Each structure stands twice: as C-alpha cells, then as structure tokens.
Image (cartoon, rainbow, N blue to C red; front, side):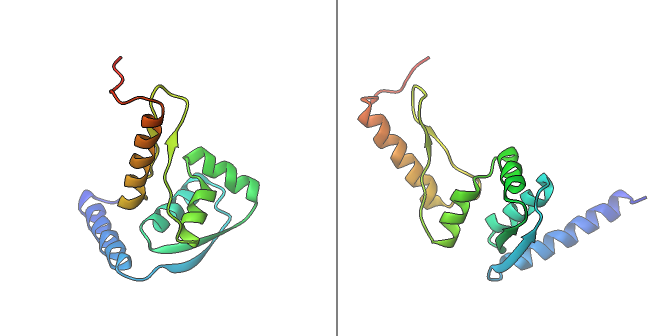
Length: 132
C-alpha cells in the first residue's frame, strides 16, 4: 500500500516528465482502439498539450460514440490541427449567442469566437445586454 509521501513523489515525477515532453516537437502517434473514455480522453489531452499528433485507429462508430460521450468533436479537431485551420464557434437558438470554446483552443480561436458572437448579436439587433 502506498503512503502519501510516495504518491506525492510519484506525481512529481510524472509532472517533471510531462513538463519535459511539452518542450519537444509533437510526435505523430497512432492511438489504437481508443474506444473507452479514458483512452480517448488521454490522447485528446496529450494532443491539446501539443505533445502528440494523433491518428486514431479502430472501429469508427465506437470511437465517434466515445468522443460524443466525452464532448469531443473529432472532425473539428482534425480540421484545425491537420490543416492549420482557424475555428470559431457559437451556439445558435438561444436569446443570445453562446460562445463555444474548448480548453485546448488558443487565444486566436477564443477571440474569433467572441467576434462571431458579437457580429451575430449585432445582426439580430441585440445591441443592449439581455436582462432576465
């Protein structure tokens, strides 16, 4: 059974390892059968940290379903990462546009999403804040 000190030491070891990897170029990585949430989430988080450039191999339907469960848009991630595309996202249909970003998004993407929301709200004539 591990003691608290050993657990802390192990975490510090992992933190040092991850910090060292973040300073290196992304590594093309084949992720095989990421059909469980933890497997796919780990690969997505490593990609968001720019440690790996993943290629997912396995049953497309299962991978897609797992991605939906954890809230990952695989198509958007592939388009923005592989083609160096920029993205912006808002949710339509509410009283005001809702900005949709991910923790993996860079500042440019977050600002683009804000700009799209502002332009959309302006086009609707929503120049004043909506009060409940």
